[in-house]
Length: 347
Image (cartoon, rainbow, N blue to C red; front, top):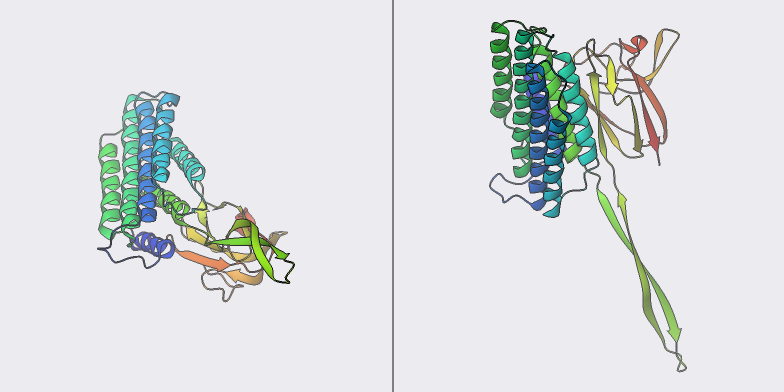
């Protein structure tokens, strides 16, 4: 795993979890819940990859019942975690995490095909299993950190990535692989998935609870009065939220923002995470083959927005939107190739 990858893992956890408690402190219910949900996500992604690996080994379509079982185990674990109470009000939870994992595993299974041969099937099966184990291991590293409210352990992530590289190399030495040398693309893809799932399970909006009481005043014959509460109303308003957008997502040449269009509220922050290198975030539009910056925001530091400033894989950039409106942006130099996005801000 590159230093940038490690930096992403640590900076992301530090951002969403904050300074946290001392390492020796007893985990709170919220920390236990987040850790349990990450473990559930880890089992799901490994389970689904195992389903596709089994199918690849026999050059057969994936078994729907196998995928359904992995989904059921995931939902059961989520429900169990929430029944224990104390879960933080995560902005994106069960449904979003499940969809993210489903889409990722299916995409990787397509990118690592068996090729219709016995040898190709064995190779693809080994690689798919390794990808699942890698994703599971990294999510478990994050689960441990979330439970203790500490940064992710460098060694834990590095060990997971080293095991993936070894497994891919071993599979390719046996021959028959349709996609040799793809560890270099699968590893960062898994890192991106893990970063996305971690953000979905840890990004919260600061909830503010307001109670309004209604009273009535009664005046007696002696001229005195008394006030009696008649009803009360309690409402909860979510505070500012942090949202994540992956930069350089999608299959090679990886020229996508994911999601391309994001709806947020005034005061929310968007954090862009570089899944592949050589991209940028620049506020403005693309028209007639021209990329036109409007200078409202740009990576990496909101300065010199009219110049080319690309970032490497693992980089992050964030911007808080304090006014309503539609904010288009693009990647320089890939805006003319369709790498554009929009942030829709509402009150």
